Image 1: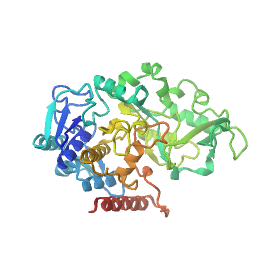
Image 2: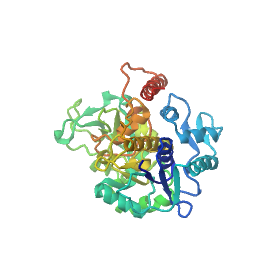
Image 3: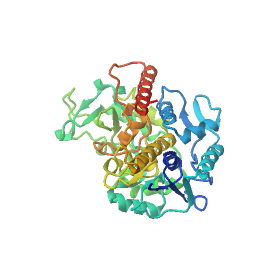
Length: 440
């Protein structure tokens, strides 16, 4: 039986190695700890939680609760460790971070199928079976090799993402469909603003509070660096250049006619569909470093977004990730090099449990590939399946990392107005579908 090289022992790499071993595959698990650490890491152990000890909500009627239940059904070491090391945190699953890391480190170190190699990998062994799970702070040398493997245009070193809102939360009576100068097939939803609405929005935006940058992000995103990364300038920084700057940038009304009034608006925020089902919309040009609460407050002032449900808030941080829809299939395998898989945040899933879930699927499918078995493709009604479908959706135009949320799931046939009830039904539908696939 062929062996597999797993690069990186964060949550995704740990899960991938664990799943491979469970299925009888020999693993060489590489991690540069303890001899070298990324700027974010402090502890020597595997699966280190660096930003929070919380693995999000426990309740099933939440995206995170649904995903964690699926992970338990799939046999996750992350969930096993979390349940063993949990600490009191109300409705969230929080853990003792050291105990959590130690549990996973000890288990993998004593697994007879796993060889631990404490060494930095700087070059991908292309002729081997490989799972690359090096995370959002992948080292420079390996990043360059990934760039050579994937192509110059398919590897990103910063995450300057705009917010994403759910389609069903938009007030369509305030919006109109159109592309500028009627180019395209009315590809955008437009939020028209009159002068008063624009000036009120502008005033709140330039005075909103930004989130503090981590030390290792500052070199990329402090104000002096925006000359280098002009394309990912935060909307609030652009606004501070002058009252009308946004009207000559992402909010320019030129080429747009409001179908409801027959006139050109004073300014217009454009929303672009984030997936082929058009269940999510991206605020075009609204990459931001505002605090999440400020994003909710200020961006809800945009016409049509008063009651918007934010599936993902905008972020500005250093993040190495690949353009997965162009490179990977839903099994996390490279389309052109099926012996190479990716897992974790480098694929564009965002968050601890999301990274771990991708590692589970990559590990299971690598083992199935080596055994010439049918690959595991989970239904899109499951959160795990929806995430893998999102990162492999070739219709996505401007790929942004995504965490678990109910907006990436297919809509219910029968609409349920109450959000909590709707989320519970979505979760129950997904869990049932997963149990059917797994025959449990």
